[in-house]
Image (cartoon, rainbow, N blue to C red; front, top):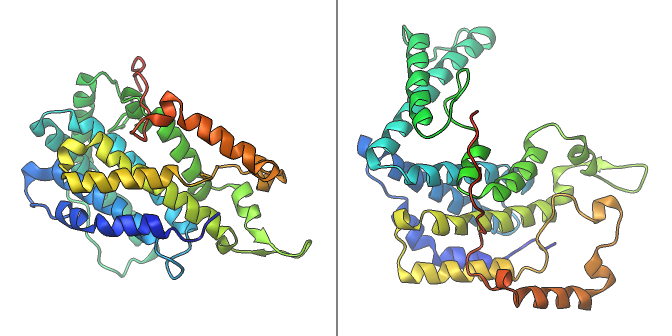
Length: 309
């Protein structure tokens, strides 16, 4: 797999003026949703610039986990975008309050146990009561949206939100990919060992081209999805959309999108190595199909019946 992607990197350079415009917001309580979208979009852009920057950037293994953050941002922001302005700002405000109070409690416990001499912000008096009230308000909102949350849950499962919006296949793929790098996974740990058997040396750099390809292809895929799911809020101009269209095409033209489980790690010969001409032929046939001709990257499915969580 490739180490560098100059064509894709050049397209992000052309998108820089739009990124700079979107990244500038107005700090106000009535702009919570818009500013979350701005921050999320900026994060996605900056990840892709970093991923497509040659050589001296951080090992791509450590970039891959950010794909999950961006994917979850997209799903939740897309859901909230369908609400009226007041409701979506209210929900974001409540979620912020819940996270802040919870983090203060956790922080207080950690420092009390491991670094008691360092002053840290303390949870306010009545913190537990405030957290519980916030949970009640959030669960009341989500019940009105068709979910009954259990315990102290403040959100439906992100997968259920993805199901509601018909994009669960995308979520499942990004979820499984990033689980491999953020959770304990013996397969991922052990395959990072390379050398002349039986002697091996373990390093995340041994899979650098693989994780670089993952971050570039799927990071760009998710970046383009902002323009498919949240275009009305981002309000790109014609020139920007033309560049995004070129970015979509550049992704589609990459000969091999990285798989979660590869032929190589299973000690199998990849089909295109066996018959390069047949691989090209299959691609040409696919591009003539209805699915191959569609302009959008994301294929959305009909939403299933919503289940309580």
